[in-house]
Image (cartoon, rainbow, N blue to C red):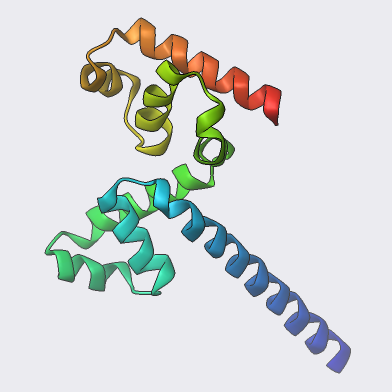
Length: 138
């Protein structure tokens, strides 16, 4: 019976270590986020504050902030986010802006086209370049 308990505690310890490593990776990538997302991630992951408490600080609905935190963490966990964050300089100059808006800031293709005053076709073409470059360098 004690062997099972030590095995369970070792597994739990390994899971905590893995989570710590993942949190550290996410915090390292937080610098590539827009300010409002970065501050949220630093509070929730870096300081370990509950989302409800952060929501009170910023006078925002907790569910809205929870959804935002979940979406940002999901976006940051994507391999494409990591690629763009770490290899931004390897992308062609025109493609960097599109990659920053779509991948790092989480804007839709349509929002990116509006923000950059370009066509949706242009944004799609540049995202194809980002995906192709990521596949080549991966």
